[in-house]
Image (cartoon, rainbow, N blue to C red; front, side, top):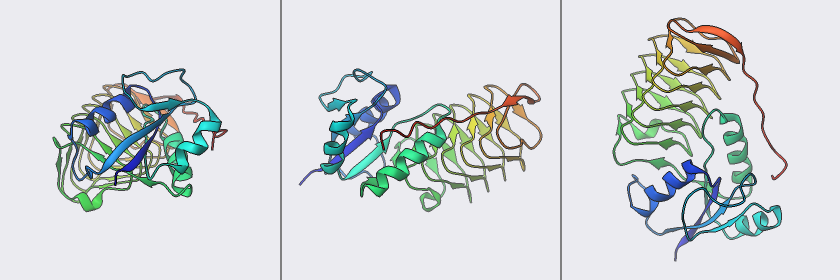
Length: 227
């Protein structure tokens, strides 16, 4: 018997993951699963074509969750704290998180991957690196050896982490940014696209440039009214 998957989010990232599943382009995903529901409180309709039932209404959410076995939280960009918060709430509803791991990746040890990770095509994760829960490693990002990446992190396309880099929870590393070996990026920070980070970054800082410099504080907002 097929088991149902619930998507929180129906924007373009959800569409990409939807197509990965439909085209069997993922590692380790049971084919006995069915994408049954899409829910997004911020949309009037999904941003991609599908035959899956969609709602933005709280009254439907309760029924969706009752009829689902697994979930995927499709929240990208710099909303890592929201992604982790919603995922933890869905776990408390007795749903199980799915890992989304493209077949076109190179991962030294899958045992070092947290629950609910999303790893897109072209990603390389080298030896002894650990990836936290509900973290996104986007297309062609490179995680060198002995890196430690926290939960709710987003490493955007083409970003490079040198060896022994520590990325704390809810950090976003922008497109094509480079973080030099041995550095620590503290919780909630945002690294601008194309930046070259040459020194440690403090908590909740936005930095950018080459070399990256402090611009302003990073504020995180989490919408909680639906869960």
